[in-house]
Image (tube, rainbow, N blue to C red; front, side):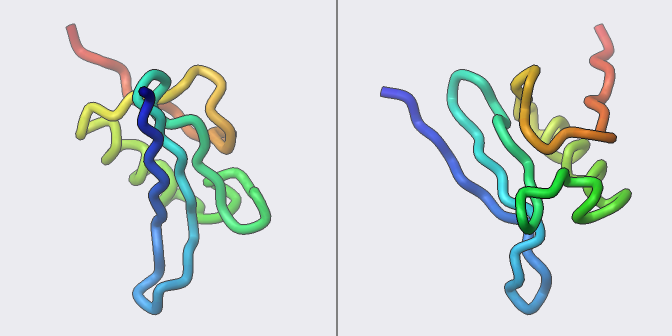
Length: 78
């Protein structure tokens, strides 16, 4: 059975700024802001910090993840 996780990035007052869907087999499948806006349109440069933090925790990203416009995945050092 596959496990999906839904997570949110919230303001201090509890307002959701980004929502993420993460599946066991594909990693992050979507990272979207209010009204399904791309993460960068919602959070600006802070969206890249979210992606970098998830990658640092070894969370993978689906190659066609929704909401990734303007974001980059860090290069892995081998």
